[in-house]
Image 1 (cartoon, helix red, strand yellow):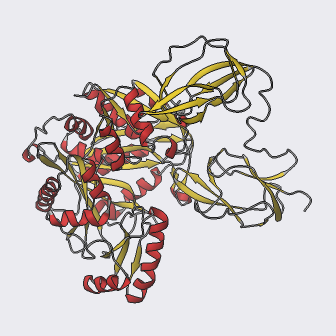
Image 2 (cartoon, chains in turn purple, red; image 1 turned 45 degrees about the horizontal axis):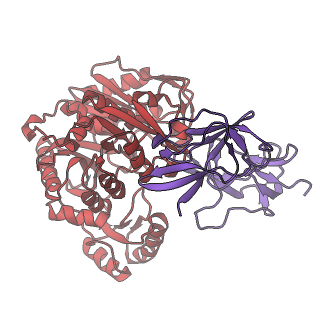
Image 3 (tube, each protein chain N blue to C red; image 1 turned 120 degrees about the vertical axis):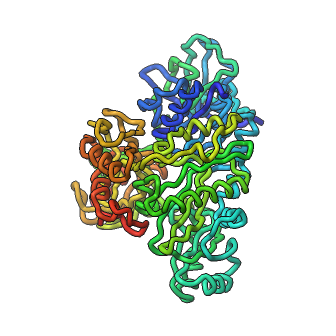
Length: 191
Length: 448
């Protein structure tokens, strides 16, 4: 059975773009007007002789809006748009919920600068902190990678954070890109 | 000659190789991660494929994506640049399997030079001196103790697959070696997935001197003299120069010829560099061979007038070198400063951000100034990749004039928006130790 990969989804108002998740040659496209639903195989991507079926991810239902392009063994790259859809039904909810966001009122440790965050000291190790842990000044929370340099992120009682607190939620995934001032760790309130 | 060449890299080196392509009438094709897709340097490429997300492991370090990009852009050759996959024999093999020429030596030579002890053995057999120590990885701690007593303390334990200082332990006596042996193995295993370690006598106050080589596929080779790279911080080179002030002309010629012979002896092809450790006593010991273009290659280009990157492409295309050693003349002195987005006054903290101004002066004398960069004012310096912003290289008839030219260029330069290593370079260039040429890898002269 061929390997399967989900298409990448990019929403622009009512329009939904389905983009290629990898580099290769893409073949087979559906005509304008065809309705795509989650799990529909919309074509095959060939990379170094290996075929991968590209499928519509969950929570995407729409009608193909672009004219059928000439896509037979067409060279495509990461995020090359393969289909433009007009959304049908409920496409807004749930799809992008992988990353949680802190509620407005919550106290959160924020990113001191942009980079990549690592929640464990090494891939097989336990996370630095887990929900329920007590955080005090100096507690190591994560590693932040910037320009191949790794710096420890410590808990500090500043920017409105208390001297100590309990970790309620980790708001980022291991290895995620973070931007300056992104909320990273949410503290439990009223503790 | 190739018509279309894929540059499997980003930033400064990608721009440098594109320039070599243009000089040869070859069309340069680029690859980018999503983080780089709108970068200004991408404009030098004729076509570009987006490989994947910002993380290098999903873009610039993914051999299958790069080879597929080469195939679908109809590239007949791949230049790996430096870093990323430049010294990865698996990548070289994958290119060959798909009919794409990898610009570099054979995968077999790369594999041998990538591991420290096989490289050391091969080069010892080819006539270079190696630091006294173990013949390959140590079987156990008793063997380590025996070798250490033979080579003489202090000794340095090193990871066989190592790099970047990890898996290294210094030991001054038997007791330290016993504890260091276990620690070095654990660290090597964690860092490289192999716990093989070997041992060498530790040489204090050494200098890092390397020889640039060009070898074609017909058994011809020349050296482009030496480079001195002893101004380092945490094994990262900061300033390089050619020729090395540590060598006499006779020693320079002799070292160059020995290096060419050794490289040809191991079947080396394309551009490569042999790195030596010069002991305080003057002996030159083989350290490692870099099977790729190096960041500091411009200083050698300045003093010899040869275009190393273009020569790499010509060699890979099967052209004979067309040079004998007497054709390679050493002219004057060249010094390079690596301008990094790091704050030297704050423990070299990385400083990604937006370049509000980026003016690196070239209109100064008495020598000439070359600037290699991929950036311009207004560009964002990405936090995802390394911190090199530019290399400023001065070339002049004498070393003193090269220093004066470089100081003038850096003082006149105006970079704003991100902190850079320019203040560090000015301090080093002004120091007595650097000006006298009497420095080694143990300290950064003029900077404490």
